[in-house]
Image 1 (cartoon, helix red, strand yellow):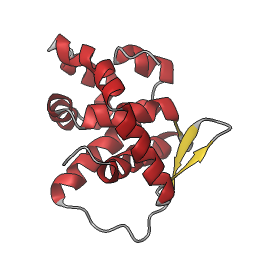
Image 2: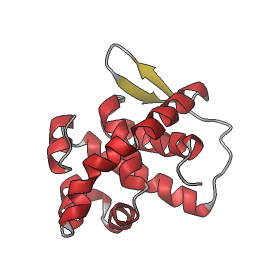
Image 3: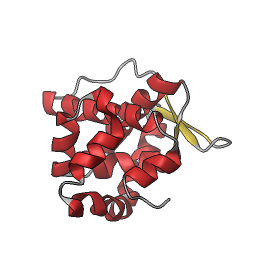
Length: 152
């Protein structure tokens, strides 16, 4: 029930907002494909929640790397969840949560005036995704891939 495009669209929008708040531009599409594999994996979620926002992606990856198999599995989870990520991006665009800038290959967050208030657990997951977006914005995409052991 967790792996659905509606939840994914909300989480991607949160991550995109975090990215935009940090650098005032849209998130590169390849980075959007990392949000759900990190947010929907229990160990990544637990470590992400416990990592302070100023600590950054490198500290998150170091903590995740304490269980080396969890860090190395991010790439495989990203591949396994790419259909869900694509469906979530599509739904977020269709519902006007995000827009795609095809020239820059980026997704831009839009204002959602009439968004229903999600449950507390979904709000916490959204805050985590916003944190991921902020962390992604602080590093070049290539370095995000290197830190998370991802190949784009």
